[in-house]
Length: 246
Image (cartoon, rainbow, N blue to C red; front, side, top):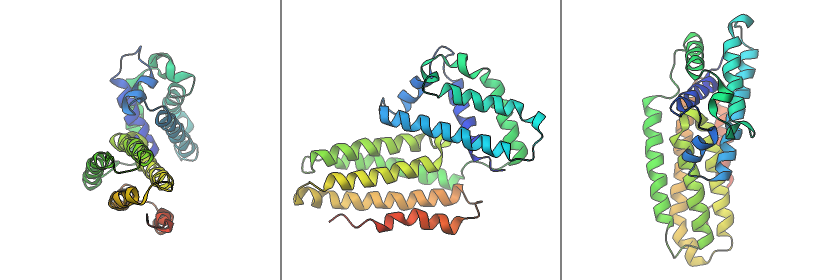
């Protein structure tokens, strides 16, 4: 049984443990994503997806039914607290005993798979990408670049940074989809830009493409056990179909 989604949910519970019982899940996401409402909604959707993946894995596992009731309770708690209606309610009213859920999920992961979510090599690459993303934000803050391009690049680079900084919770897949969103939207914004703006943006575009290649490296490390690696690499190669910024 794949336990990656359970690891993400466990790390989410650990983050909730640091909040006061009367605080809300929305407050946590608001802090992580700098108040960006679109990013918060994406994060909530990603969390619900992780719960669904975990529930599906649990349902199709060989673990006896009477042994998984605690895990099911932990999963339903996260689903409630990060739902549209539950995210504005005090955490404790939706999620129950956080410490118990942390123990149960930890025991499940240890029982099924003693591996770690990402190796030290992946963590090192992620730290480098976060640093380079921050630097790209500064480089885009140039008055010679079209203001629409500047604003879109800065906003979506920030969202990418936010997801990378919480990669233990959201997983590398969330970072990859956010990255692809960044690439598409910057290209669209550049359509109406002047030649001078595009010339200024070109080296920054090349650096953003380089971020994608390193994210693929992280994906290979984190998902080294999957059996569809060759096909997954072809899917990630969709970026190759994007023409260069001219």
